[in-house]
Image (cartoon, rainbow, N blue to C red; front, top):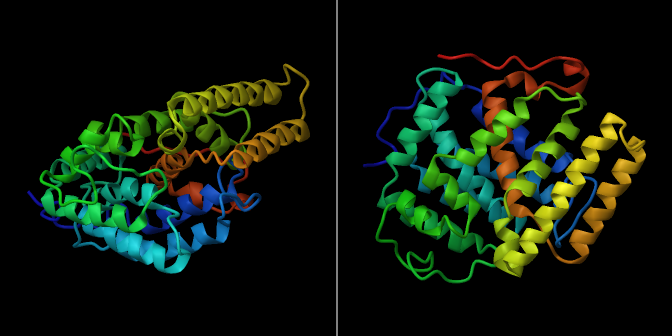
Length: 315
């Protein structure tokens, strides 16, 4: 079954491409320890490369009549042309099924998006796997190595969802394909909860730290081992607890002390070459869905000050 069989429906989420670009911008506009941001370069990359990548990849990602694998392949090649390195493979792998689903959802609400995403994942076929494997090989992500079955350097013999299922135990992005984006939907629910601090950047920091504390980062695990990834998750949990305590005033910390703590951890991670890249990719995916469901998130801060997102109800 092909992932292109359901006719596009551009009216359900007409702002889908804008939501993707906004999510990618917020990824680097928000200071997230260990990741590249506008405030902090690292890992031989600059924030501008990520912004250029998002703009270059959007056309391929939202090509209405293309399958999921073809979208990823086109977007990865466009990214490589402008950035010269892999900046967004994980983002594209996560967002391509959602872009496909958003164009085919029957209504512009969460239930319809979830249903369309499951239909998209169920329809992934061998052509999707071939194109996605070619994209992954072209991007050449750090620590990729070789797999015992369905290695991306060889032609696949199963559909893309099945191939991702084989990699789910070692890759958090692959796991989303296998289990219907369970981690993403859970994180979205957390992101929607009322926050003590209405500042969007702080909310995104908390989203990122929560994901990193909850799940060992696959990118770090591939390059440096599971114990190192576990240590980073423990540190993320401690930083998140400190952030929560500081904002509630329990320990007397002020904003400057909290920011200094985050900056010190960022410097430490980058000095050790540790980039929680998979966690950043998951964060972007959550933000993409959040903006799909609540476009007001994309309003300039000056317009959105004090506004409470109004999440759509059931279809």
